[in-house]
Image (tube, rainbow, N blue to C red; front, side, top):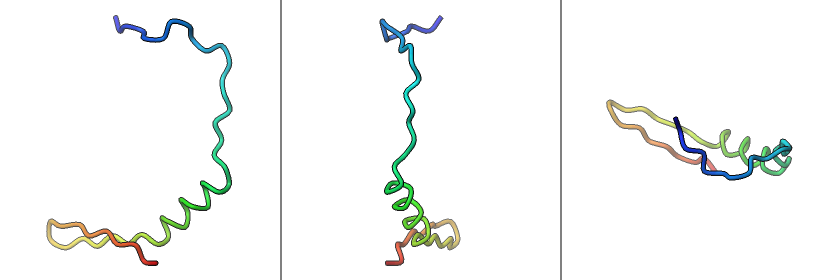
Length: 48
C-alpha cells in the first residue's frame, strides 16, 4: 500500500481558479507560438 506523506489531510477544497491575467498570458503565448516540423526535427518559434 502506498505511504501517505501528509499527516493531516485537508478538510476543505481550496478554489484554484486562475487569474484573468494568467489566462490572457497563456492565450497570447499560444497564439504567437509557431511549430514547424521538418523531417524528424521540430522547430518552435515565438512570433512577436
